[in-house]
Image 1: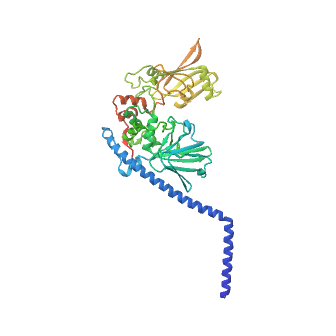
Image 2 (image 1 turned 135 degrees about the vertical axis):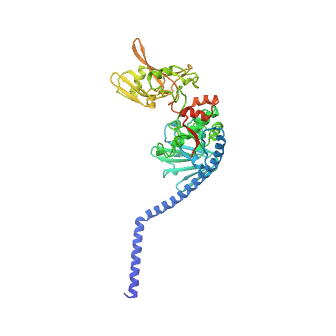
Length: 476
């Protein structure tokens, strides 16, 4: 092939390639452009998230330095209890971030129809490859139609030390404040709102929401350690993972920020910074509840007659014997009992003729209850299911001091026995004599209050309720 022919061949090849490229661009050009833009956006988002993570890491390190010093000072007062403290490189594990799902008004749902956010300092809204900056006091209103949620998520961060505020959210306090950051996610059901913040900061808002700040400091310190144990067992768990969180802020976990942090709650958290309970190397399942009926770890109350005798008496050294909820009673008319059973088990029993305790646990709590009717019977299992079935509604609960508590919802506790009531020889209802308020596992908060008033330390309180086998140590 001579030089002229080769040149013509090359020109023809170039023309064919050019035509092919033009055809491909016309067909796929928009897609190529979208892919390139997505790659650019992803890179920017990754850089933005790395920047946010670095800022959070530095904030945690600053917080942990202070917490570590406070934990060391508390160690001097723990006596012979084994207590360990973390080297600098491990501090971050003692104060990890926790993700808290903020429920809607009065904890009715995980989802919000809309969210109104303010802050006491300038803050930034991050979404896609965009940042929007707001000044202190500015109001940001979000709903499913908000542009920033077009791709599903947006993150809000504070530009300096301060708090976010949710002025329209219904809680015991007005306009609750939140430290840390917010993530808002759009889903078909509504908006999810997750507050991410250091664990120790979170606890400062849990303690006053779970225990009155007027209680003695040693009781509040015991509460702080319990709440820390509970939270650390939840972090990274599956129960709330579907909402992008570790816990929510309701009684389903432990109440967070229903009452704002107080000087007392901050002191309790700081003086126990990083401290948890361990037993056999595992973090204690540190459950707690309001008021005990006088049960103790060593009690064996599974037999019906033994439990009834226990509940009819009062041990003089019971620290809660003067609490109104120490003993209570509630009367269910036959009509009310029939209505409650029908709502839970429609058509399964007919008219109720008997209510019988089939099983108690070692501490006397009812675990299995049989409802017998004229056409059948049902067996109700589990403490919560039993308390829900026997919800009091508008029926008055009479406390041992003679006061009356109407409309409390669930039965106060599952520590009760049942006595049928008769009128002119005909069954007319059932009387429940009971004691305590709450599920009855772990620490009684009112018991902790009285023990602290009697001079007991937080460690002594915890070992009384969780056993001598628990050690109060620093988280590792």
